[in-house]
Amino acid sequence: MATPVTPKRQLIYFEGAQFRAANSEELIQRQGSVSNFICLYQYTEKTFQGNGFYGRQTTPYSVTDGLTFFNFDAEIINVFAYINIPGTGGTTELDLKVASAGSSTWTSIFSTTPKFTSAAPTLARVDVTGTNPPVTGVTAPVFTSSPLNVNAGDAVRLDILQAMTGDPVTVGALIVYRPR
Image (cartoon, rainbow, N blue to C red):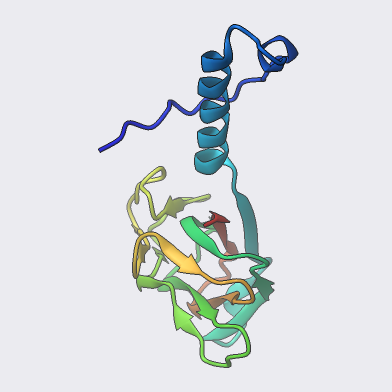
């Protein structure tokens, strides 16, 4: 198996790119580092928010905060879910669903959806990759596949499947994706 060039954010200098420059190998290594950095660390985010007292809405509540469309083939590499202030009882459960271009069939991107109980702390957050591991009262989401590929023209939405009682305040999800 080939070893990838270490990804680095670095500049390419004019002197190294001049015709017949003595350091052309260094230039190729530098370009490889920059290309790998872009491939691994450049991404796009979309945040869906259920602002205010979302528990007052009838659940399930579909299409919270609109739809997002993918302009290019992409892979969803992480999803963060959060609540601001928990309610006094019950569970808030979120689901992100995707539909192919031109389709009205929506499918969950999760095999396990993110959930927050009233035991969750204020500003609780969790994500798929474990950067924010679950704490008391929080269930981490799990993708149906990894990486989770979507195609140009696909749409994604956030649904609130159930909501805590006692006026929970603000819930949301942030999708992190990059071109594939």
